[in-house]
Image 1 (spheres, one colour):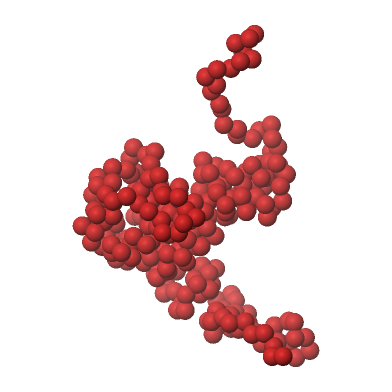
Image 2 (cartoon, rainbow, N blue to C red):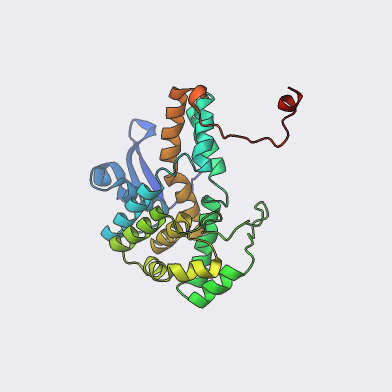
Length: 264
């Protein structure tokens, strides 16, 4: 029988002469990771190299690093982070808390799937305002059957009255670091897009534009968005584990009919 072969363009290893289970050298896209890259490139450059064939340029690396900072901690208001906090305060394992954050943060409300849909729209509409007008006014569907129809236009804040300050700050920062086509166009036409949609822009739309300008596909962008939002979820889960359930921010519930109070 022939030995099984792993088919991958991403990674190649050479075994140690005295141990076939240990790598003497590891190559990512042809680059010697430990002999050439280690200590010479930033984490985001290694991250990008795992997803795409070409190394990032300086401007691209700056943009991806800024995006990673912007997404690092969505904050306790975010459902994915709150899910991780629930895991932490309940004594779940670290892996379970992160899985909870991934599960909740995978969806169509500020999650990975929303970024996927917006990146698909960027691919279809480009920088054509008329094409965006048609997309923004048409019903949104998701071709994958396991996902329900989005309840709001992807990339926009369904509860917002105006564009959140961090969204505007992130967009301005990204444009200053890397004047790529989609980001520049979005900064110039943000107000028109919001007027057409009737909702303010969300950070997911800006993130999708940045990921598209960096050359990632919609599938890659979805995966990166999930990954880059995990640090905040992890930190908040650990913090809540230490604080305990008595200090956990449970949501207040207003009962229209409280039988116990009425009987008293």
